[in-house]
Amino acid sequence: MIEAEVTVKNRAGLHTRPAAALVKIAAKYKSEIYLVRDKFSINAKSIIGVMTLAAEQGSKLLIKADGNDEAQALQELINLFDAGFGEI
Amino acid sequence: MRFDNLEVMKQEAIRVENLVNSPAKLTPLTGNLGFDKEITDKNLYRPQLALAGYVGLFNYNQIQVLGNTEFHYLNSLDEKQRLNAIKTLAQFPVPCVIITNNHQPPPEFLEICIENNIPLFSTPFETTKTFYLLSEYLDDQFAPHVVVHGSFVDVYGVGILFVGRSGIGKSEVALDLIERGHRLVADDIVMLTKKRETILMGTGTSLVQHFMEIRGLGIIDIRQMFGIRAIRFQKRLEIIVELEDWDQQTEYTRTGLDESFTSLMGVEITNIKLPIFSGKNITVIAEVIAINYLLRTYGYNAAKVFSDKLHDVIKKRSAGPTRNHSEQRLISYFQADVE
Image 1: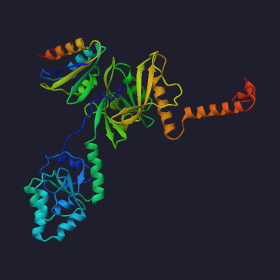
Image 2 (image 1 turned 90 degrees about the horizontal axis):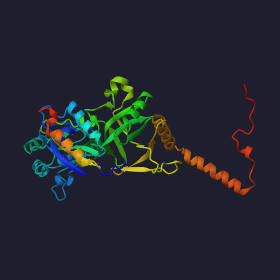
Image 3 (image 1 turned 180 degrees about the horizontal axis):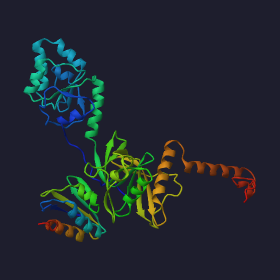
């Protein structure tokens, strides 16, 4: 299992559309992927779960990936966060 | 599915302010003084020896409860001694003091509390009842809880949690059950809280409530669509149903004689592995699981009854000569029933 910390960069935070984009990427991979905020851990393939984090601009999340394709999955998700979900 | 790697969350402290939400009907006597102080211990303490001057082993970080005995004692002292007794207590950083039986504290008590930033509450209940009500509340506030990914439905009054890989159809099963009159507790994000060491209570989150995602449809609101009878806020978890892709290698229960359990935060929960393949109606099976669980809870175990019957027959046969086959029919003589 590998993990990485990411920061929500766009002003609107991890709202519905970015959440959908994130879930879409996570669901492509076979690995188990979790997003953690203050011990609150949710499945990154569940849109309701991702939205439950209600992550605002500046909040830090931990991505955990476990499986054969974990490295690619983690990298693509990090890229998504770094690009501010295409909103910056 | 394993639940031992779940992150167990636990409240480290609650604010004094929250105590007014407890069922102990607490009235603040010092306004909102010290409302932001933290309570880090869920136990309650009666500071009898501390009032008498002995402060060895004094659990000052616990909520201090003063009842009849303490007040009787304070009233028996002269003014100077009483002041001393109260000051002995107040020199410690106690989170708050609760006075039971609606006792009115002497004015100097109030003053010393305000001076030392100690919030003071009164309750109409007697001490034993106050202990009971507050302990129950604090137990809940400090209870360990986890978040699991699954769908939690009340089926015939039995709390069933469906778990399984993303996309296997947990929400769809829940939706189907709702359509058949069962009640949704939470979908996708289920928070389970351990209560009284042996019970897990499940609920959703305040944000998600009874929203649900159906692949290909998007987000729907069960409460708006199906009304209040289709939902509930909390339910005890009784059975975990693991939905999984049919796997030739996995052994599935055939008789149901041996129950299998999963340990979740130290609580044993009945666990059923259910392989999914086309033509299998999971909803109906979920209803049957609930009814069978109810039967067992009420003392009837179908697997055991059948097994016992088989034992009896085998025993009879080994005792005497085998009877002919037709005598094994449930109905030994068919009356005419032809069209």
